[in-house]
Structures are given as structure tokens and as C-alpha cells.
Image 1 (spheres, rainbow, N blue to C red):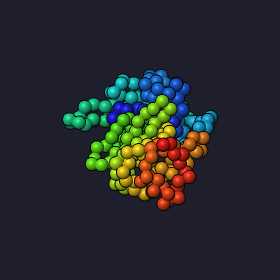
Image 2 (image 1 turned 45 degrees about the vertical axis):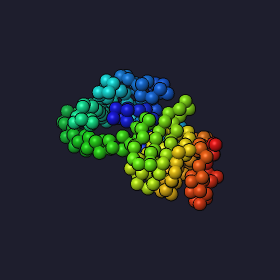
Image 3 (image 1 turned 90 degrees about the vertical axis):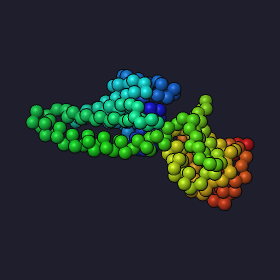
Image 4 (image 1 turned 60 degrees about the vertical axis):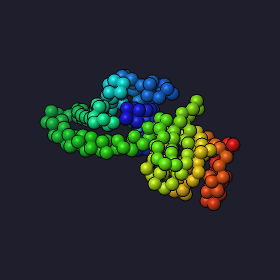
Length: 248
């Protein structure tokens, strides 16, 4: 749970927000701590520079495996978010999200009136963030195999980025349940390994095609590893053989 909430990526597809940190984040969340500063922008930056009016943020609290707090500074108000993790029932984690918003400038009366409206907005924000937690869990870029008979979608980190492994039977329910689209968008995936694949449903092709196009825009080849007749058959039927760079 902690890793899924704190792993640093340049873009979060769940929130549709891009992040640019001042600190070196090549080591992931381990490089982030209290005082780390960043800016956030709605949508994808696609490697570009954030605009001058990007929202500035700072990591205000950081206790490994326990709590994370951030502060966002806008022109008219300041937002503070506190996320705390505690052990729940066996095998579960209790997540507490607290959001505070303080208006800036104006008279005391005006700030009081705005504060009431912001309280309602803060409650809506908390409800929204809690609802997103399952999707964030699906993005966790860790060695994670969902063990169901004959199927697995696994992310593994290598020196130059992440490799997505398609293993066993990757059918339509597996693609939806294992968040294939979000896994391909949440981190920089440098290759897809199909050496252990036995069946691939066509519903997996749109996420793979979007990944290939995004890699091309970023100047990277869409590498597919492993000789696999089943994968070649499916992409051949769909006319996608030329989209991927095959590595045997």
C-alpha cells in the first residue's frame, strides 16, 4: 500500500496529473522526503517543461511506511493533505486521508465565507481520493504476480526501466482485473516480455498499441521480448506486426 501511494512517477494516469520534482528521483520514492519540492500540472507533459503558473508543492511530512503529508500553494489558498496508514484487520491496511484548505488574502469576513465553501470542497476531495485508492494499488510498480490459474501480469524493474511480463493466459477478464492499461501508463515501460505467454485476448491489444505509440513519441522503440507464436499470430491478424520491435 505504501509503495503504491509514494512511488514517484512523472505522470499519474489515475489522477491525470504530471509531477516534476526538484530532487533527483531516479531512485524512486527513496529520494523523496520532508522538504522535497515539486510542481504539478494537469494532464501529460510528455517530457516538456511545466508552465510558469504550475501549482507548487512540498512534502511536509514523511514517515516511512506510516504517513505522508503534502502542501500545495495556489494563488488564493493553500491545501494540505495528510495520509496515514495503520494495520487494520489481518491482511488489510487502514488508510486515513485528511485534507485542509486555508484561504489567502482578503478580509476576515471574506476568508470566513470562503472557508465554509472550501470545507465542502475538501470533503469532496477526501471522498474522491479514497475512491481512487484501488486504482493506485493497481499501478504499484513492484514485483507483483496475481496468482490465478494460468495467468499473470507482472512488472519487474531493470536498470533502464520497467519490463511488463505477460504470462500464461491473458484473457479479457485478466486484462481488466489486472489493470493492464494503468500498468503500462504508470511508469516507463521499456519492454514487454511475452516468452511465457500461452494465450492473448485481442482486448489486450489497444493498451499495448497505446503504449507503443507513447514510446514512439518519447523516442523509444516498443520492444517485445521472447519468441512467441501466439503473440505473433494475434498481432499479425490485427495488422500490428510492424508496430513492435521484436527481441528474440
